[in-house]
Length: 250
Image (cartoon, rainbow, N blue to C red; front, side, top):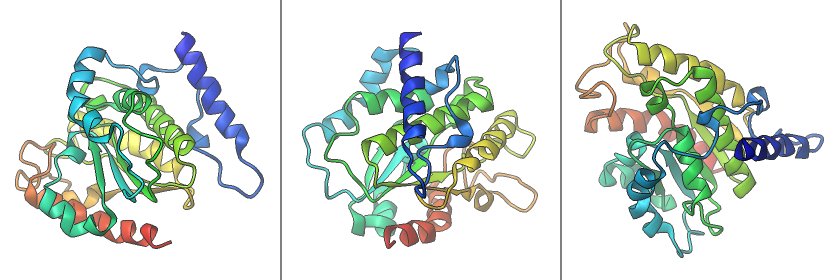
């Protein structure tokens, strides 16, 4: 309860801090509420497991000067799974940093941000944020997952106020549009697109590039209908590259 109250106060303080003519911090359309759901609080069902999973990332960023990393990708296994060669081909010129971690839900990302995986020296020009599909897989309500994503945005903006955030819609999963998790993720996307202000938070939905005209998801694009294949990553990279380049050159 105490942690919930603290994060609600923190979020409300950020909302009140915006001056006239300045884009409102975070996502005012998804403001903190009482009580805050688990998805919007930095904690994990198993903190010990999360600490173990994130140990390699913590070692990678601990004590490092990350000021040269102008581009950061933050998310779950879909972010973590980028092929380094493809990654470098698309965005190597900006020393991109991959902060994706398998199994992460919104609350896990919040925990990691609270526990050393966003050092003070990390002030990128742009963060590409893709998170939430694991929440659908564990039964979270779309409204709670969306609020968790909004909280991540608020924390990132507090840590690095000049950083823009490219918020990606959760990718399609399941064979077709009737898959339960895809329905949930589509609703989350409807909610988080309200965070778009075209200044500090830019929303982009690359999921349409991953499916055919009928909404079917090919195993050639996502072998397990969740994680992209090499072809899937190439399609995803192509769908977001132009927007990333535009934002990096602003």
